[in-house]
Length: 194
Image (cartoon, rainbow, N blue to C red):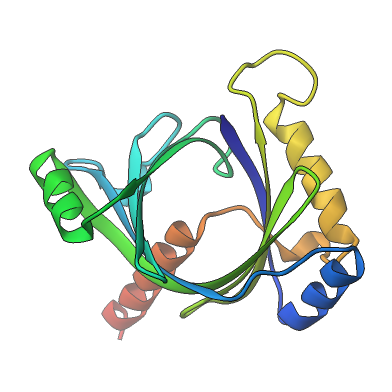
């Protein structure tokens, strides 16, 4: 399956939550997720492009660890994704490192989820970045048939976000890993220019 998503910055997660509840959504309790993103040795973070394998170890309460494989299909927020539960995060990290991967970026967020129809909606507070709303839809891997075009699905998802008060200028075209990485690099550049 393909995960197609749209993400937007928000300064008012409570207002988005209220609108979702009014639409009939049941918002889950907050979950803290600590993500570590891994790339193949020799691949710089800036070099991640279409079909570059990206692995993620996510530790979340209560005591669940997930290993996720992703690669970008066309646009950054249109990804092929596979995920499994693993029993030991530190052993999984060792396996990745011994398999030629390194930790490229890490971050923590607090996430609240809900579902409405085919959509999974996440209300996220990312440490160092602030509040975001993310909506995703899983579509078949096939390039054919209605609803299989990632750009069309992203337009559909953004139209839904408009109902929650999201504006075009709020749209974010990068994943949290990229945003955190870029934020760290801009701080380094600022220090180097002093």
